[in-house]
Image (cartoon, rainbow, N blue to C red):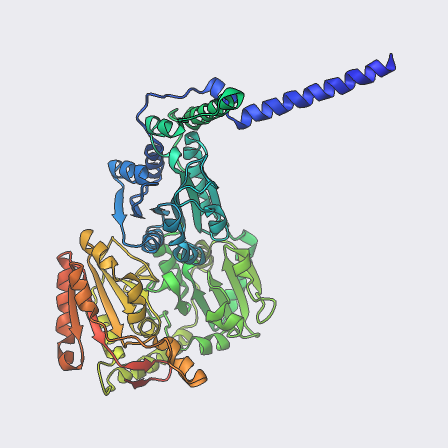
Length: 608
């Protein structure tokens, strides 16, 4: 009887495998799900409606886009929900704008673009958001679920493109997945170290059943068994696509995880800072991230009285003329400091990879990202205390723990005196005459003096913007942005003439959406930041030369107001700046095309 017992065991195992395989296939094909969740073939709703509902429930107020048929249902539904749709002239601009909204509002910025080239056009802007640690949701269209990889219109492997750039990438496969997937993506974008996330929406997950079903009809199906199998598979795929699609689901946001310093770490920092005679705090953009309001961070810094160097989104955090905000001579101050707090600041090229820090200094480093926290610490510097946590809340807790203690006043006063000396020298450089055109430093000083107190500065360029960073003073927190397009405030955009070429078409966007932007263009007809090193090192200016283009006329053509300033009308500089401000108050975008000489701000030399 034993052989028969063995046969029975084998047959039983084989039967279990077959049944298991069938159950797995039924699960993958959605057959099991369809037994309990029906498909409403009569509903006129579509996936775009669900996307809009989730975004609305999460407080999203703006979507930036360049329209495409793959994503039209999302845009239409969002507009009906009261979410403002801002359509730009390039997909990269849409993502830059969403990035800016994220930085200024503390919420997730959202951009939606069409499949294929629409998405590839966003790569630079998405990478920028990743490096800036901005919570951003990129929504991308895609070919239908059954047509991907088969040569459909604008069908490429989008997931592979964005996985290195985004914290989370996924492709929607059925309409019922939309709510949990969008909620998850929005939570991931804000958790830990914020960053971009990407959701791919195949076109058949966004349009209504009655339209999608027409695409699943086989005109000349194969005959016989194969024909019946193909027809059944297509019908089942369609029904599974919409099964349970419109069932009620919880739209509320998921919890966001933000790392915090431990009480023990805070206590060690309190001991270090309380003994310091010459402490310095260097703040990076990460310090402005939610959940701590920037006003609370500002008060904490003022209570501490420690000299601060502000970078990135922290520019303007302490206002225009704070006694503890030091703008100049950072390298010297860091070498002299006995305690340095790196609050969201990374030891990359901006701190010479850590070489600007003294080996005698006690260094407290705070960053949400472990890699950024310890970057280059194996080579040029070592943190005394390294905290993987939120920089903003750390500063508030540090201030609370040191209540009543302030930095010795002679230390920030001595650094501020150095500021005054350097800025007086810069002011003197602004009065130097150029053989042709305007002194760019004079133009920047003029705008800084006349700029409204509620202005936001957007800086996009090389040489001209490098000078602006030392001269123009943001008036308050979150008032300085790297490349972006905004729709919320009166905005000053400081352009180099090279960078303006990328985005001047957005003056059409500014006009259509009544965005009161004022663009200040430093036009020296050159990629000067490159030319300055290329010519002496390699003896050629090839590919660096531009033309003194009439950018002001281009702005006029897009419906804005354009102004030209050169050496012939230099005395009208103040009047033109004031006129551009009046244009902005009336809702018109303005562009001031300033013909400037070339300047090396590092040594103050000015030439044509």
